[in-house]
Length: 400
Ligand SMILES: *Cc1c(COP(=O)(O)O)cnc(C)c1O
Image 1 (cartoon, protein in one colour):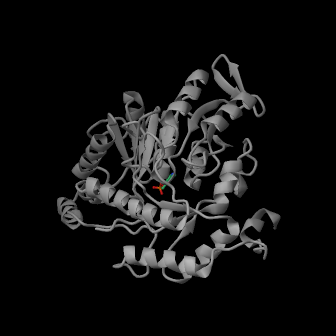
Image 2 (cartoon, protein in one colour):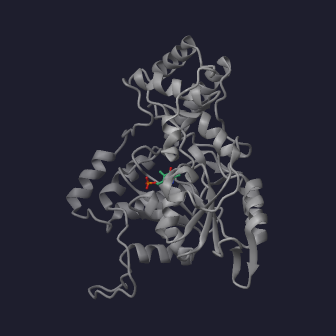
Image 3 (spheres, protein in one colour):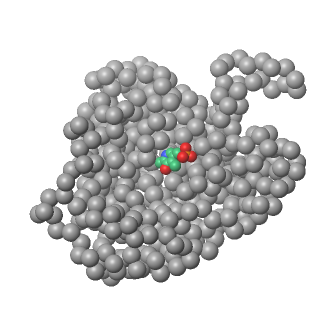
């Protein structure tokens, strides 16, 4: 009962809520911005190019499974945009995370440090690889992994052994640090990489939300050993469902490709699999949609950024904090976010907007409050708790 009390807690009458006219003003602004959509969804996909044409070509060719030219072309599009040497298309972002961790040498029983405030797929991907997530806090401005909290975690738990860094409390090997770029806003990668460098722990980026986001002039997802992308229906580029592993490491790319394609040795007809493989490659049908979407990717990102600037001007004028790109960064503004006064105001706002045809969503419940992750190792996460109470996503779809 108490475990789920966050969902049932009654609002106390002491809470000062946003007044009704302010709520109405925001609703009006969003409705005008998305005047063609009624109701206004949080992030509906848009198909504005060659999607149908390529789907027809794909079906006519009969190459609909993961063997096909659209898969290769889509991977090349992603290499071009991200600057990654390799891109391997997967059925979804969660599978991409799972395969990345395995290929990067994360072993069953290992620990992988991630942030407490993230989408559940980050933690699930770690679990799928047989490892155990542990949680550090996020920064209030980037909404992603806090280098200071990571440092505090390692100072508390890390112990060096001959084959790497271990958590001295649970005796698990800490085999990766996995930051996530929340809503497309890059985390402080330089600081995180430098801390991990000192300890000799690799960085793996969950860049599922940050296709098109740059940190210090370089695309997110290629700073660590390996990174992942998602092309789910609500992401800036969609293939219906889909994901991608991106890396500059030849060995990791080859390994991901191999284990995710049934671990079958290359041969024209023999079925020889030298280990238990997975079947997680993106079908050509889905990649066809992705290829069409990538042809106008620059326009998509420019439009999302332009929407964010309009929001920023509006929320500045009424004194409500709007989340903007961190220093050194260019963000894709996947999901626009505002920071409300407290949990009470958040609940009122969610209720009002969703009742009145504008879809809004709160940021995620922090991982250590979810049943599968309650007992995971962590440090105090005050910023995550603060943001969890206040951050709301507002409609962010492309307006083209
Ligand atoms: C969307 C997302 C994923 C997973 O992607 P799917 O394609 O839905 O499996 C992973 N991590 C984060 C942070 C995401 O937002």
